[in-house]
Image: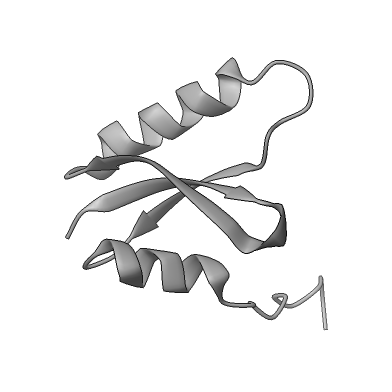
Length: 72
């Protein structure tokens, strides 16, 4: 399965930036994109591992519950 790199913009808009077969290359590209943003970022750069573009977009649009906070 490929790794997709997306820019997540306000109002749940997604912009596909790249696609890679290996995590290492995808991660390096995403880090380079984040580092190249000068000043205010234009959205979040996310790496998604999914079977196809539609699944990647669906996962990016899902609302996730926050994880546990500290010691319980």
